[in-house]
Amino acid sequence: MNIDAFGRKINYLRISVTDRCNLRCVYCMPEEGIKLFPHSEILTYEEIIKIVKASRKIGIDKIRITGGEPLIRKNLPYLIEKINEIVGIKDLAITTNGILLWKLLPQLKKAGLKRVNISLDSLKKDRFYKITKQDALDDVIKSIEKCLEESIMPIKINTVVIKGINHDEIIDFAKITQNKPIIVRFIEYMPWGNLNRWDKERIINANEIKSIIEKEFGKIIPVSTSSTGPAVNYHINGFKGYIGFITPLSEHFCGNCNRIRLTADGKLRLCLFSQNEIDIKTKIRSGASIEELSQFIIDAIYKKPEKIDITGHLKDHKREMSQIGG
Ligand code: SAM
Image 1: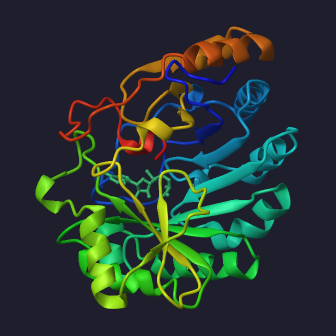
Image 2 (image 1 turned 180 degrees about the horizontal axis):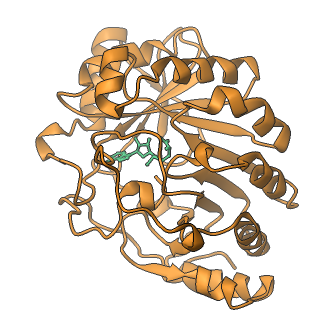
């Protein structure tokens, strides 16, 4: 039912709940922001819940909430609670910059949140500010501590490695895994958007990152049991946590892709990199039943592309990452 035209089983829906963000990461959003979707164009929680119910019926059992920054949308624990109540949803996670997480975590956990990915590109206060335009590193660290306290497991930290911006912190990030059960995942800097100053020269691929780590800590060992999507996890000898690499550039993972995306303004995206979008908002606002929505999603899944070449700069992209849901 949820098999695409290339035989891949699609069981993972990433939902962006907002295009707004409280950070202005240099590689993601200009300081003055970008043109935002009008509120009327953003799916309501009830609409999102209906889409999740329809998705569940065709085999989706893994949901991730993202944005923009998902925690700036009002009353997010309500959405988490309602999704968690849908029978058969096995995994319910969030991707966040972590600034508001320490405050909201108890409510989110009570509502049924299972896992958290926190994006963090620098452990230095001044650099964090330079990258994000917010003096908020302490809040993010507090959130990581809070996740450990609340035993939200596994905690993943996602770090985009960019030459000349934060590549000299690779070892410091790897060291986070020494005494804490945290997975630090290094992400290759992807060519994205009209607005960011993407520069090929700034890419550091996963192999380079790996050799920097191995030079410091010795050979790292792949963890065969990892079921963490596109990242391959490794273990530094004697360390409690893991490190991982997300390699959209150096190693395509399209063949194993199990995901589709829902944008905050109600478009299904079958692939992060494909421009092809399917308007489910019009369908839902025209009164479609859950069964009709399920069929709509099945038809959409069938249009998922086999793979997209992202080796060039995707500068003609209609949307920034924050408008899709990274
Ligand atoms: N606000 C949330 C957060 O910070 O995790 C969710 C949205 S954010 C767009 C999701 C992820 O996309 C972040 O980890 C961010 O670093 C990553 N990202 C944005 N632009 C990117 C790029 N050009 N290459 C690689 N990762 C990127």
